Length: 168
Image (tube, rainbow, N blue to C red):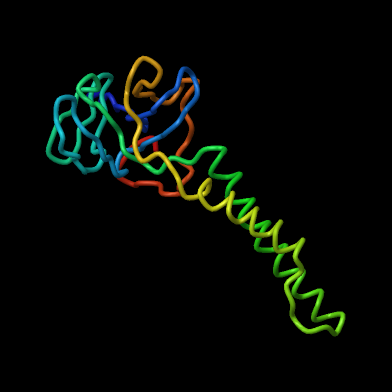
């Protein structure tokens, strides 16, 4: 009688942590843009596989301790606040002009509304557009590989279930 031991492969995730807060979560197949320590070139690839201490990309095996920076779209509280200020300023102007039309007046610029609207747009636009493009790895920011069962693990919410990965 033959017994086959079926291995289960859990979906691994690569996390960028700031202390214990998750900044970035990468799954196998995600784009991975990074720079190595002592190098000026930025490498772009995808996460092929993960181990406890290294990332397997399309062409390279990159240990965590050799990565200097990770490049990704970084959104902060200031970016979200800037978006809301910008949208609020635009809406204030449009609503005031719509109110003028509804009341039967010609379109004109009210000095108070224009000042507030331009102030909101002027403050919100730079806050919305200025973003960090990369995160340097140091004592605060660390890379960590997690598997199912870890407190940091989160199921893949992208909706793709691979028929070729058992236990996915």
